Structures are given as structure tokens and as C-alpha cells.
Length: 401
Image (cartoon, rainbow, N blue to C red; front, side):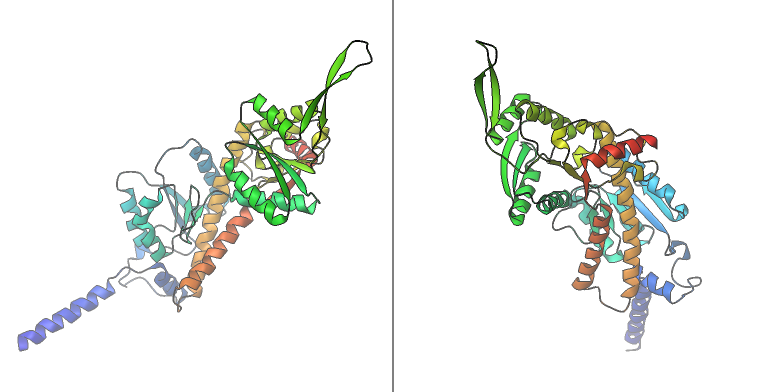
């Protein structure tokens, strides 16, 4: 009997020791910070304690894409502009066991944010521990409906650009819209149809193939019901071909880049179409496409950048007059604003954790935090209406800088 009591006592002591040695999660650390706990002499490793202002961010990439270099450049620009550069640290993880190393580092509270492009199937390996320690993830890829609240895509929501374009059309009193859409751009077409129907706008569509000028010409003639007629001239015995537009629209929507727009402007002039506003999306950013074109004088496009002169220093290092330079600025801005969101998400998470130290982390809590993350991202990628005339002035302003 005495031996049994000794065994029981050893088991109880071992169980208590095991409970004391369990890993502390972030909200435990935040609580200790709030109450001023002295870590020295305690069971917590003081070297692993991360001050609340420090942000260690791990970058874990599955592949090398050409545009990652520009995204990384945007990361560096944002990092340099922070007053506390030493407290915002980025580290690229490489090697075969990088996921395991990342999981261990999160457990040890050495990682506070993650930037990755890993497939969702591979991310399951450390997604649970990210939830346990409230580590937000900036994802270089398209966001899915079932993505957890801590993970947000680096890319803006292009549906908001389309929705803003439709709202601006309605605000200007447009009722019947023509749309010239690339056959490869079915995703945009789906959103345009949805939001136009909700706004009560009539939409008439014609599709074309890129790199096929004849396809563009046929689309214009079909969309505007252009008829060809032969008429006599003042010179005896001579005739000429004229075109008559039988279908009228309030505006034409062309969600393609400015190079394609140039071809369509020539077609509009060739078929003597009536003047009308032409509307586009962010691919219209170059000011070269609208030089001395009366057809576009009342046109506008929807963008998420705004004025080039107001971009963060170091991002607009090239003259934005080519499609390649525009895409480069886009990628750099993705990195800049993406890291800005992640840094903010880390702060918001810590604030929310401290405010809920004594509460359960239930579904309502995570939904509320998810909305805050979404609002912060949408603020960074706010759609803007850019009048084409204002864009030309913006180009002059950019040249002066």
C-alpha cells in the first residue's frame, strides 16, 4: 500500500510539471506583458520573448516567378520608410524542411507574420498553429471563399473596380452600355453582367480576339450595327463608300489595356461613330492612348493607384508610358501595400488579443477580426474614378517630378 501511494504521488508531480512546461501561446504572452510579469527566473525562456512592437515576418515561396522580384522591391521600400526599421524584419526561408522550421518558429513566438504562395494543400501543415498563435498570412495568390480569417490575398479585389465602374455609369445617367470584351476576359464579363443587371443598366456585348484586327473590326460593326452604303460623289461617274451607325449607346465599356484601345479608337473614327464616352479599367493607366482623341474626351477609367505623383517614393522609377513599366509599378505597389497590410494586421491582432484576454475566442470574435482585416485591405485598394483629361494633366505632373 505504501508503494502505491508513492507511485501515485510521483504521477501527480510529473503531471504538474508537464502542465507547467506546455508552450505558451501569444495571448498568454500578451497577458504577461500587460500585467508586467518579470520573465527572468521564470519557466519562460527570456530569449524567446518578443516585445510587442517587434514584427518578424517569414517569407516562404514555392516557386520563383518573374514578378516576385518587383513585389519584393515593394517590400523593401515599405520597410525602409518605417521609422522603426529594426522592429520590422523580413526573412526568406529556404531548404527542404522550411515548413517544419516555420512551424517550430511560430511555436517559439519568433514569427509574427507570414508571406507565402504555397498551395492550400501544403499550408494545412502550419495553418492550425497559425490560428493558435494568431499569426496573419499575406497570400501571394487568389483568395478562396474558404480561406481562414487570418489569411488575405496580396491582390486587390478587381470585382470592386467593376462595381465602381457600373456605379459611376449609373451616376452619370447612362442607361444603355455597349461592351467590347476580349474572348480571354470571361471573368470580367461575368462581373459586369452581374453588377449591370443589379444597377438596371442594359448591356449589349460583342467579343473579339486579341492580335486580330479583323476580329476587332467585325465586333465594332456588329455591336453598332454599322451598314455600308455606296453613294455618288460630286464628280460624275465616281462613288464612295460611307458607313451609317444604326445602333446608339450612351457609352462603350472596354476593359482591356490601352494598346487595344488605340486600335478601337481608329475603328470608331473609320466607321464614323457618334462621339460617346469610352470607359475602361486600370489597364488604361498610360496617358498616351488619349492624345487628341475627341471620342474619349468625356471618358474615364477606374483605377486603384491614383496620381503617379503621389506614389510612395521609389515605386514610380520609370516613365509610365509602356505596358511593361505600368505592370512593374503595379507589382511594386502590390508588395508595398501588401506589407503595409500585414504590419497593420499584426498590430490589430495583438490589440484584439489583449482586449479579449478573459474572453473565449469564439466564432463572433474571429468574424469581427476578419472584417477588420478586410476593411484595412479595401482601404489600401480603394477604387478611384480617373477622368481621361485629368490623366493627361497627371502625366505632365509626373514628368515634372
